Structures are given as C-alpha cells and as structure tokens.
Length: 92
Image (cartoon, rainbow, N blue to C red; front, side, top):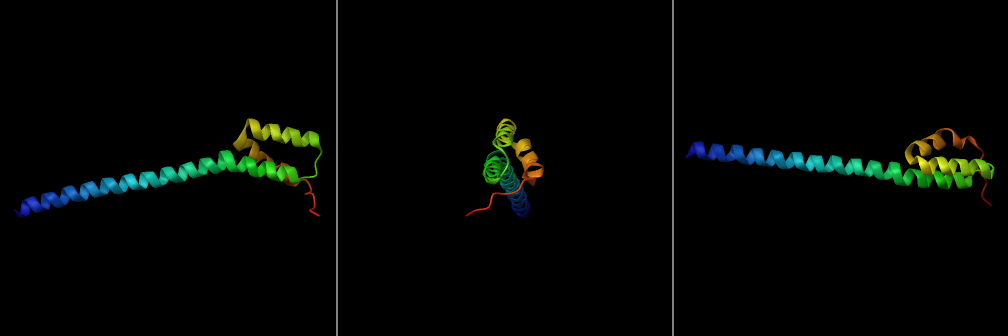
C-alpha cells in the first residue's frame, strides 16, 4: 500500500511539473507577443507622431514616412536614432 501511495505521489508531481512548464511557456509566449505588438505596431505610430512634430521640410518627412511604412521595425529604429536630431516645433 505504501508503494502505491509513493507511486501516486510521483505521478502527481510529474503532472504538476508538466502543468508548470506549460504555464511558463504560455507566459513567455505572451511576453513575445507583447514585444511584437510594440515593435511592429506601436513603435511606427510613435515615430509618425514624432515626425509630425519636427520642423523638417515636407520632402524629408515624406521620405521618412515611406521608410517607416515599408520596413516598420528597422525604419522606426533608424528614425529614432538618426531622424530625431532635428529641432522640434514648439507648441503655442
């Protein structure tokens, strides 16, 4: 009888460890999806907002818009690193 209880305990521990692994996998999958959401959707939107506030000429704005639209992640990062060196338009 004691051997059966030990066997049941081992099976229960194994099942719980599998469930814990699945929960951790779901958590990391959720973090990955959040990163993708920020990188692909919110980062270009933020760059378009900042681009609208700059005082650069409309030709350069159009060029930056095309770069951000065609390659959203790399274009947004490039704009944040290179394109934000222009003077911001002051608010009234």
